[in-house]
Length: 576
Image: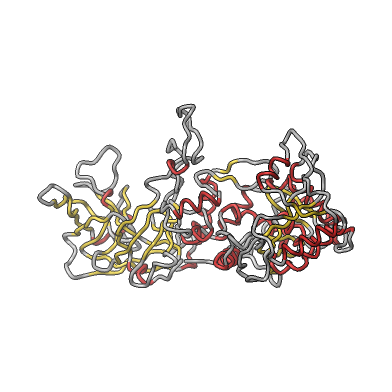
């Protein structure tokens, strides 16, 4: 069963960003207005880390009566595609957020960005650079040594305007020139050493086609986009902290030129999501897909939001996760079990219960009449009677889990073994009488007898006291299904990092840490009510965990289910 994100009001979780935004609101800064933005580059699929940023930006604006913009920073035509735009829009909506009228693209602002670049040239704050990329690196200096001025830094304003116009006109090949801001080559912040703001790219853009052959750098475009859209708080991860001085410098120059009014947008940084057992690097995610280590970007083991959705993770689970891990200024690691537990908690509350036998062996009730069947009543949710119940047909031949029978039981085994009684959940109490084997000694069927007066829910059923309680599915009525048992993609918390016992000179490849058991596909038998479910319906398979009908492969009459998460954390004491 799928469900829409909850609209229940919860007490806001306080953090340093929320405190700062609330203080600005109380002080009447920006007229008390709150506008944030989520600005993905459309060059890939969103991952778990983006979910944290989405929940922060949209959630904060929602809670404080503001607005959050969805903006695509589409400034690099060589890597961006409409496919990614569509997937990002779908993922943000899936998480339960809406931007209303506030959908924007950096490419919409290209004419104004060129105007601003030309203004900087005229103000003596930008120049056309003709050094090669290698020469620029040599001139840039290091973290401990200042940079040197380029020999082209003192070109005249007219010369710079002419060269920039010819760059726009397509007269030069890629890399021949770039436009740089003129700030301070001796600055201790290397990002202020005349950063590049425009480059030549003879590439077709997915929205503007071949209209442009110069494109703004992200660090130039981003603050301009914020200012054009009247963003109040530009929330970004810590890797942009060193870029904040340029963000502020650029907007100050443009404000002095009369393009923007103060107060200008304020950039605030927070720690990105660092999650164990996954990699979130775009380069590594591409390697996983292109190297055939996963079944594509929406593989349920991938830490992408489209993969998470296909696995059965819920929007509510991600929102709860974002609240639980909080927002901080310091980088730290969050264990994958926290995310899994957030999903488990939400699914425990919302998922109806069903029965599935994943490793079937036949149980023959020898004293039950052949050709006869009857209905047993089973609740859809043990804690929510308002969800009603469904019937499960009981017959002479049933499927049970192979692990539920032992011909010679170990100490403490309470399930089926010769002479032992157990209750078939929602059905009858049975006593095991033995088993049948093939020529090789493999068990092909377990036999038992039932007690007709022991049916669950009937008078006298409670007179039978047994310790074992087994789930089952009627052989005649059950539905065969493909079930994919997904687990963590990596076997170690920090893929690719050195572990205790590694040799000093060992360079560990993160691909060496892949979990060989991250996916198993089996044929299982499901109770008949699961035969006509629709894609993305979620259930708890009793004893086995939470499962979802596959978003693409599942069909009515031919079910395919993916395991979302187990009933409890199976990694706590794994030693990994």
